Image (cartoon, rainbow, N blue to C red; front, side):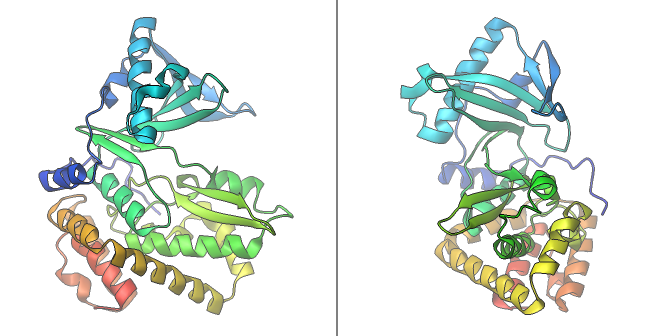
Length: 341
């Protein structure tokens, strides 16, 4: 599939800004995305096996880094502890990495606890309205909570823990201890969640697999970590992880593990769970969709293409009246969760 290589960044317009303020997502922060760009240089970051990670560790002069350290440490506490500065003295920025790969060009901040050397990450990115809608939809309608902060042109995102999908497929998919049924079930449910919420580009390196040991076997959860292509692309298959070649091995794994009746059962189960979350957050979703329906987060050509492809997929004409990606998403949820045309 051809993915838009240079997706534009869509600004946050007034109604979305008010939504973010009302739900404590928009908070003033002491450092912006652009401030991190003034480094003295960088060097490639390699993993434990010596492979290039496509991240570059940034170097700053001592006075600049002192300011960056204080500001980023405080932002971390805003994410984790409502800005309580009690822990600032024993936390510090261990590393600032920058990634030129992909659309968002994020900075990844590694925070370390000096008492025990435990570390954590968070990300500093450029604001993009379509990404914010994706983060918020994931937070409300998935089993996962998403922690993020917006301030003008800067987006702060909490790190989502798990094994990157491409690494899991390469090293773990054939483990003897793998619970095949549970993993296949979770990927099917993940595929369904992405399509209901129109979260696109879930190639294997854009999601992680969270593995939790249970008393008798492992449990798994597949979590999206990249929301750049939420409600942006015009091709319907962009919103179905099963169609990406990078996922071929895990898709075949699911085909070999599940029959058609069981697959349908898990798809219906996931839709039921999303419906329950929708009922619990009805007013919040309605307000978010209202913002999205009035907003521009894609091109007219992509809107028209997606309308046509979803009409064909669902055997309906209900998408024809949609004029924005917000309209399409609302209709997609109505069709898939309530059977409404």
